[in-house]
Image (cartoon, rainbow, N blue to C red; front, side, top):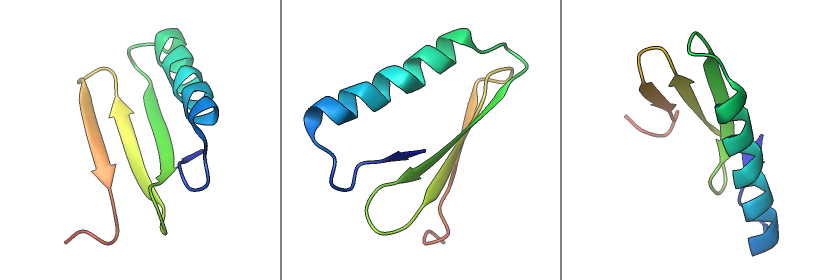
Length: 62
């Protein structure tokens, strides 16, 4: 899980490296779920590597 709330620059770089490493190690049939807290609520990004599609799910967007 990734959250930028209260995060300083070195922590952001560490989280970005963690995500990048997992993307490199994943297989094309994989779905990658990335829960993320941009400020005060959680959103979900889903990366479908096979179709090269990213879904962004945010309950506050209509």
